[in-house]
Image (cartoon, rainbow, N blue to C red; front, side):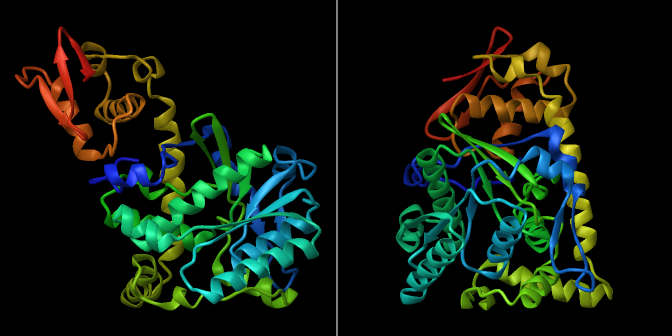
Length: 361
């Protein structure tokens, strides 16, 4: 994902101990998004997974599942148990943001796991302190903390797959957030049904089976089955950017246009996601893995692939906080007739062009 600016400062990276690295999406499983559907309430309030999903992710294997205790994750947990996923490890992180209520959330999730005869991993992180130390928003710090917790749980349990309960409304809100931050179309489609993250020697595959299901459908499922869940009162507060989009910006847009724009944004994100996967597959891996970039070879690529190649190459060189501006500055080094031979990179590093090669020092 190319962004106008980077979300992580050098201080942030040290705070999260290198957990936040690049995400890879698998081209051969993108279209799995079309294989998941929710049967309407008048039929059954259940998520019906396709045979392909069961085949690709057999219920007999062990999986992690992130459970906050809210309605979305509780619905997903019960739906998976109904499908025969009885080796789930329920993972819950106490963010320490709501005092006694946060501790009650953790106990609630632990009890649910025990009642369903499932193993659990219950952790705790002072997200407020992390946000202050790393100069991040509470929402971003919480996301980093959860990801770090999931990675540790994956290592401890020797389990490389985790179910998360993100749904269609989450995808729409994330697409708008990334758009306002200056992301590319790929960034707006960053939330995928299936994505693989590599952190050191640990590979974590994130599965989001509800990404084609709307919040209203999940609410119907919860209501019909009379499932208990925990309500986070901060979801209604307008302090966070996501809540502003959810409660104010999207409703205002729909009022102005007189129609439901969420489905339009969701559909666009699906198209962008599939096209992003195709473009990613065209990036020459021999270039991105090399110590130096060949100016002649890079010039032969279309601009879109030049950017993607430079982005991956810089990340392989361990360059921090790579955003759109940095990629464009490096790309200027390969322009015909340019006299530029050096550009600055974060943390007092530089990209140089010499003898037809670009290298980092």
